[in-house]
Amino acid sequence: MLSPKLRRITQLLARLPGVGEKTAQRYLMFFLTAEPALAKDLAAELAELHERVRPCVRCGNLADVERPEQEAVCAICLDGKRDPHILCVVARVHDVVAIERAGSMRGRYFVLGRLLSPLEGVGPEELPIPRLVRRIEAEGITEVIVATPPSVDGEATALLLKREIGPLGVSLTRIASGVPHGGDLEFADAITMGRALAGRQKL
Amino acid sequence: MRPLVIEHVSVRQLRNLAAVDLDFGPRFNVVSGDNGQGKTNLLEALYVLATSKSFRASRPGELVVHGGELGSVRGRVREGDLSREQSVGVRPGARLVRIDGKRPPSLAAYAVATPIVVFHPGEIALSMGGGSERRRLLDRVALYLEPSSMGELESFARALRERQKALEVRGVAASDLDQWEELVARHGVRVMATRRRAATELAREAERAFERIAAEGLVLRATYAPGAPEDESRFRDELASQRARDMRRGGAGAGPHRDDLSLTIGDHPVRGVASQGQHRAVVLALKAAEVEVVGAARDVRPVLLLDDVSSELDRGRTAALFAFLRAHEGQVFLTTTRPELIDTGPTAGPADRADFRVVSGVIGPG
Image 1 (tube, each protein chain N blue to C red):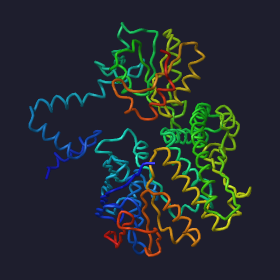
Image 2 (cartoon, rainbow over the protein chains, first blue to last red):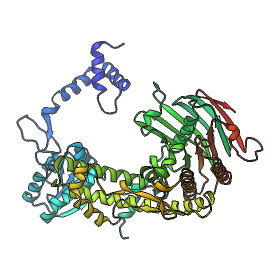
Image 3 (cartoon, one colour):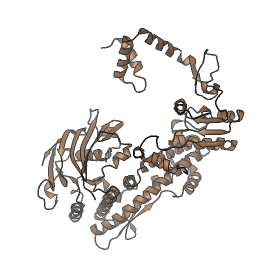
Image 4 (cartoon, each protein chain N blue to C red):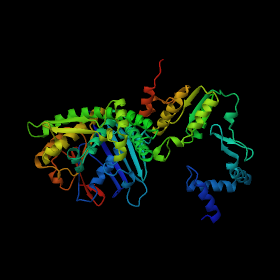
């Protein structure tokens, strides 16, 4: 039986995604038996997380700030080696991380924060499209890559962006969808395979 | 067509079946017992094993024993010379499927591995009822013809709900309606194209089967009746022009959700003119067609499940049904309250007919 204090920590840990009661207890026991500095350091970092990490004012990606009053600008926006004419539009910060892992996107990002979905209370007015349009115009962006997910809501958002950004005269592309690298074709699901065939390219 | 046989099944905590382990014969398996003992639950467990879904509950959680957490069905299925282990775990809100211990790429891939066709009394709605039962028939068949059809149907339904919500909240001038309608039409025409294929195949087989079953001179015709223009841009135009009406009605007037398989006997619509017996013959013809089309798509003889069939049919048509079942040559499961009335033809042992008896969720030899 856990003491009230340990029980409370377990409950907090169990709120993390993918963590249940048992895993939470394992984490707790780990903190209790490991170096005390580990718990202290983690606690200190978490305590100031919301003051020190904020959405980047230019793209919406996460950025570190030194002082609370400082304007947040992320590392990608500050990176002078990025191609300033290419902008990749994504739904969430996770997607920036996923695309950055590939390492082949040379431009910068714009995080929408959500996808168009009336069912979830998100209409066109809830999307930061005016801010996106202003940025494209102000920074002389020539190519916009739409990397919203291939779900129905992701497609609808892409179509909305096409309508809003299309008239600006920039090159507008949508990421392809297809079979994963290194895998056998037999393991691709039918929808992915269908998309890969529909989006086939000339050899 | 190659034989397909469910050789063994282990059911745990599914409805009133706490723990059932059975070996089955390759032909007729007759399950008898009084009403409410769990006969249909066994058929349902076999259907879950083959498709991961029930033919009764729409939510998987309802299948689980009251108070139980996880129900499961595990089985050995032989297809031609190869046998495989399949399993389905069910708990409220989730289904876990495995083939030989491995996760299939999708639920749709699992569902087409072991073709199975169920005949149950509620299916009289195929002939007498509205379009929903017939659309479900088209979609079951479509899954075998075009594995991506389930995904297209889900995408269509999602886009349609999003459009309806936009209409409801922001009215006919909502600025994102064009985008939703483009997606409704894009996915909708794919749904209709696959259903048309399914309908064409079903119609050919159903018309042929009806000739054998029904009285001389009666001709059944089945034709696909799409609920919207099958051309993508015409479908979009139709949606755009009907926004006000769709908003008032709380649903779209056009779309594959209004599809039907229209049935006529001698140029008259079956609904309205057919006798009780003719309705039953139409249902049997459609089910025979499902067996044929699904079997041909996978080149196996589907497993047949018949729930409480003898009570539903008059004598002449019971004979027609059993003639069909004997000609099928595949594995058949039947439930009945009166096993002595089940005419499985000449039998020479359990390879031809195995009998089981169900008493309060416990199943033993009959």
